[in-house]
Length: 605
Image (tube, rainbow, N blue to C red; front, side, top):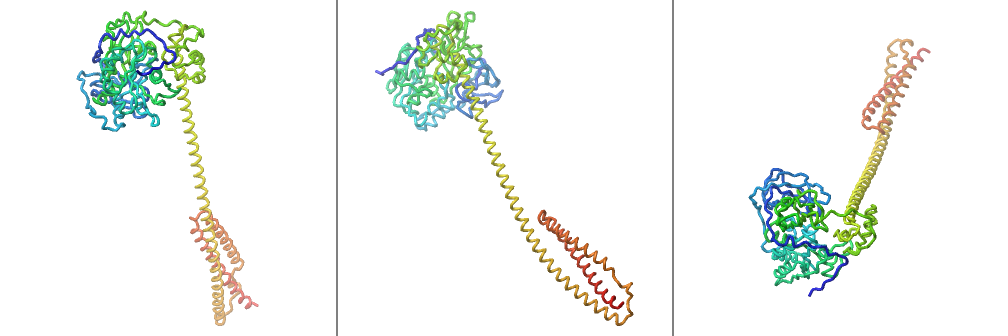
């Protein structure tokens, strides 16, 4: 016999399960329209990949998750996409979200399916990808994507795989009836998950208030190594951490996951979805929903298409609106009141309670805490609900978090036993929400700061590189200018020396030639008048001085131009050469004048 352990706390509320177990699971039928929220589980919302007016087939993907953790959404039947708009969705706050509205055409025409005859011949990653493509998420809790849950960290070997059939919350009987009528499919799905994980032990846990389900599962598990274990009825024994404690005696560490201690839990509904996805090629488009409460004439369980409006299921169960006082989605412990019956069935919807005023009366007004300690005794997580309440109410969220607020599973046991009618779970949900918002804002601020710092570092680096390049260009330009200047000075100095020497030689030769010509002319002609032959020597000297001054100016401009702008060097060199010619002509004229003046003076004397 399998050894069982007990967990701390827990309560025994009235079960009210007999109301919905008297009839077999019924087909809900086809409503006029199906409303499919783009987010039906924990993780990133899907994005629509169809357009308004487009016709789709049953099982066709109509929304896909491209980034982040999530699974796609499929069309539950064939029909036409009416709209993609924000509509009411299942949520405690009654919020709206993006939904695809599908108008069924009544043909129920399937798209092409790809069943796998022998999944053992495939790689495990291929099977996991098929599970993800089928849109399967957990159907018994928050809706964690199944393919991710079946892929634990490589350093976390799963030794025990638990199939959770406890269904401990009052009123809900969806899993109970599923185990009674579809036990073979549950075993098939469990075998597929066991093949993926290779655990040492597979266990199906069922509370002892479900003898028919336990018998059906034991019969289906004959000839296998799967254990069917009946556990004592105690709320919340169906909680993941509590069930692990009952079956293994181990506790999941605070802030950890079951895989940390080598255990994994899956829901019986999830097992059926896995079996259908692998063996029949069908995505997750239906689920079993319990419709119960004293305000319906024919309570029971319905196999409903995802997206079916709650009011349609209520009409199928014979809703008596005159007696209806309150609609609750989920169980009376962890569920919440619906603002409208127009919200659709999603992958995590398991129960709707149409209660009368006597069945679920309005809660009593909240009174002051009397510090009785009953909430602490009932808490299955061994927390301090009273202190958590005070901190949550006062907005001291950091202190609440230090008291392991996020270990709270929101089972409602503390609120159930509170004599002051304090809605403790609502305070905890509020505090968790505020902490998540603060974390998101802090993360956003940190990322913005990181982006700003990275940008500043990039700008500083670019500025440094730009400054370095500027200095290198300036240095190279200075070196080039210095080199050109040196070359120009050397060439200019060399050119001036050659020109000056040649000029002096030419002047001497010209002077000698003129003297010889004058001498021969004087011997054959009369003396020349001093007044008519004497040149204007002061004017010539002034002209020479001006030419030399202009030459010096041009030479200075040439040197400046070579240092500042190489483009004007040629022009200035031509100007300097022209002035060299002018100086040369002036010197020649002066030499000639000097030579002519000397004989004339001697002749006069």
